[in-house]
Image 1: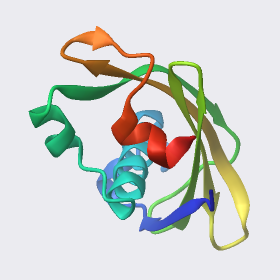
Image 2: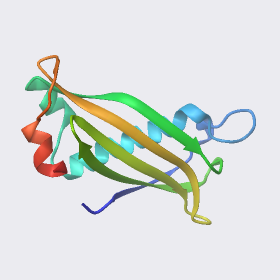
Image 3: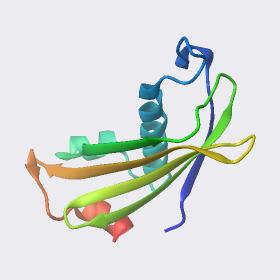
Length: 129
């Protein structure tokens, strides 16, 4: 599957006293990018939830490389693969001014159907086989 890309820009209030993006905001960036990626495939979390399907985060690993600062434009590049019951997103945040990697993220998700861990989720599997 072709990686999904989403361009974003750092806002002033996302930075800490050091003038760099607060570490928690990288999770916001990648979560927004994952939602946009799924929307581009026609997958809606709200629609899935109404049908008893919830995709939940089981684990997140963030590796910070180069800090982002206020006004920096950046790209979140997302790819996904399925391993067993897990849907694994690999995401890179790349500062556009110099193409430097700012953060590398791995997000492990699981699908719950009616509150129970699902080995198969046909609604998602057709996209991430």
